[in-house]
Image 1 (cartoon, rainbow, N blue to C red):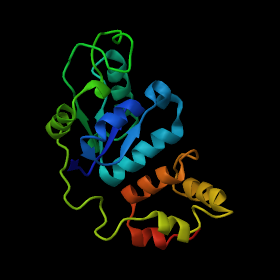
Image 2: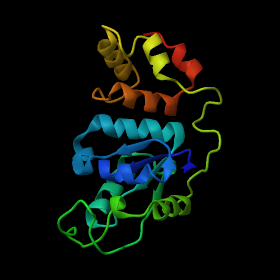
Image 3: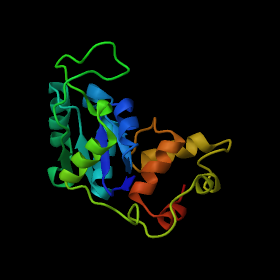
Image 4: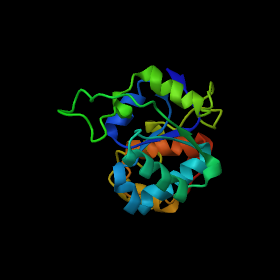
Length: 193
């Protein structure tokens, strides 16, 4: 499995599952067209793009290109790379019939095809992991800071999410992944909550 620096944006959870077999990085979902009306998720994409860059990997159908173009309009294009998978006709295993255009999406691709698409797009192979050089923020750190496993954890997470301009529906695990993408452990431990 290859570790890459940029976060990858895909359409849905099945795409995320397929991609996680090929690369080790933060993978974000658009929830299909749900991104269009979700200002918090748009803000999250901008934040992650500034911190580590984004690679957009959508299905090769019309809907995938609409989502890709929408991301172009809401995130600084200088921070975004675009990965394209080939047109392969067929249907995904979990579906009863092929898509409208008859093409396989990200979820139907072999891990090596996805990896090749990301490398062609200019993904940065990252031997050291996210931008910090020390240890990553851990679940124990989240507990120490009161953000999980405590009586007031939900309220503290809500305040931190607001402070960092992140979606309020982000789970504790989701928050941990984002925090490791945008700050070092030292920066995290110095936060005033």
